[in-house]
Length: 388
Image 1 (tube, rainbow, N blue to C red):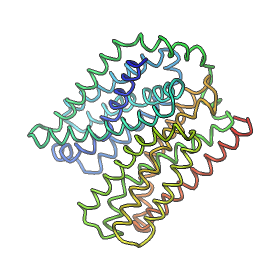
Image 2 (spheres, rainbow, N blue to C red; image 1 turned 60 degrees about the horizontal axis):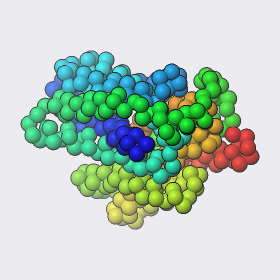
Image 3 (tube, one colour; image 1 turned 60 degrees about the vertical axis):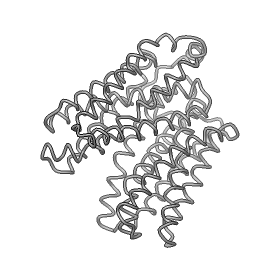
Image 4 (cartoon, one colour; image 1 turned 90 degrees about the vertical axis):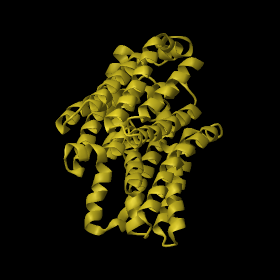
């Protein structure tokens, strides 16, 4: 099982590698193809749409193929899509390839998160998502190194594609590990019950869980996307200083998840979520206070650190909340709602701030957090009463 766990850790790095590539490469792509800067949003929406679709069907795919094959096939599809980006010479080709790009990510994300929630301790869920952050940081670094070294943006996509192909080969070569030892025992104990999407919505606590995931990703993505703009336009920082603080927000999430892996040995999932929410609210409060640039920057980092335990703990608690027999189905719905939140809410803030001003930023984050706290506590109450 040590080898399988190592493969899963590498797979989480792989999940993160493509996620920030588009943003890093877009200035070069946009200039080369002569399209408006805003067209990056079109590609991003297509990728997100594919991810949502594959998340919704992850239960059926995993039941038919098993987690190992779904992971291997999904990574292969992603590798192929990345290679497709590397040979694209027009915007419409990028749009076409963006769909399998997203489809490859959603199923593996839901399948792996459910597998880890079923078979491993909470610390591994936290550390695995820390490794996702490593991948998300390394991807843009590889793209940047290619551009600085004189290679075109297609070279960055090609390198990431080759790395994904290598992982695909390793995953297919180790499929037998998913059917042995502890994994096989867990599969037998967690035999799945056939359940459709409508039935998922009828599960007690399902709506609360899905809204919680929607809110978490809405909070994280809005905070990260608009942090630099808030610090420049509302706090008077230079663009370079604001960019550094914004990068520390993501560093706070990544390092926070590493530390939280150890804290989970003392606190259960429910209390890890509450701890993260409390730290996040404290960070948002600092963002609201006009106490200088350093305090605002510290508040942003606090929001990142507070986000760190929430997502992994909510994921890990899914089988306990809903039962192992339906955990993959609810996991897919939760992931789909998370992607919808990350796709819709940052854009909505952009529209609202255009009418009211960027000062709305911390209040918008606080409103999302308030809804998430209510939904999480309602879910906890249902669980405590034995209704979930």
